[in-house]
Image (spheres, rainbow, N blue to C red):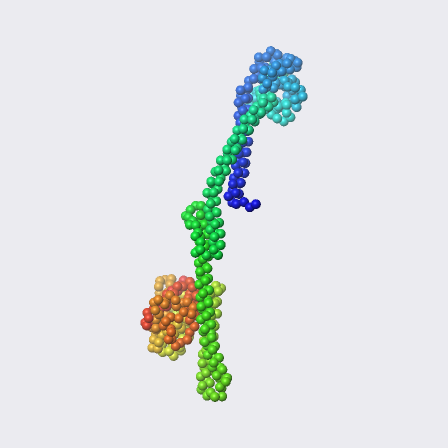
Length: 493
């Protein structure tokens, strides 16, 4: 049978209570017995001395076994709680008041007698019980002299066996009733207290378990459940665990939403890419079929024109596939960043050099400002090269003839510099700026653009800058141009 936390705590506390009650009972018994021994021994401390002094038989010190036996028997009848023994100087028992069959030892230790007579130890002092092989009891003792000669000791057990029998019987009945009542009352009180206490302690745990259960049953959809509001600033660990659970639920739902959004974006991207792949493939197939079926009827110039068209579609197809692989690689989370120190302006000149012929062909002025400087930055040179390439290519695509694309480098402070790519091209609508970094998004200014592109360049740029922990900013005015800018960390000398 499986027990709940509440039941396990109740049983554990019950066992602890029983153990503590048992220890307390034994301790109280021990303390009570010691207190009783101390009182009785102190009360009868001079009993043996008075008997030895007042009794003529013991006063003379003459040892008469028969007479002493009669004396001890008479004294025992008068005081049934006492046991009388006459001990020689060596500790041997010579005469006693009890029946001979009850005596279990013939000699006792004299050390407790000396301690009592000479007051060398605190009360209670326990001496050997002749009626038991190893039991000790409180006693009273006095030496017996014949003139100056020590004849022995009068040894009186204060609380004898008969006294113990009667006392224990009466005490057992009283204690049994008292402890039964106390035990039943204590257990009832304990269970009532535990029911309230454990319900208070375990109720948050049950509530947390209930929240988890309904969350699982809702298939981890937070919108379908009403979770408990836990106190985040509480010192109660269960409350804190509840807060952590709510945070986990929010994080799980956030990740689910992200996965759903990413999945939708991937489906949409796949649909767009499929269309973009089919377009150049269909064009290539058409021209190749024309060349294959009507080659004899086509002029040499027409054949060259068809082949150039096929080549352009091949290049576009190859560029699209390269960008798809690059974007997939960046989104895989397995891209490493290798930062180093290099001259930023030298890198800009190298990148600009790749586009000088294209800019000249489009009659666009591609400039760098300032044209000569020494700015050492600490970054991943390969990824920054790719970012600049994409941004310059994007700027050239959206800038008309006689336009300008300008790269500017400015100091921000001793630790950072500012890099911007500016053009005076078609610009972007304000409401579209937030979407230009999404894969396959094409702004409205690109509808009539004659230059074919795949729409993945800015998405790749954004992923690369995220890896470099760099934030890019975009400002644009429709028909006036666009500015992409970000800060780079300078290399420390």
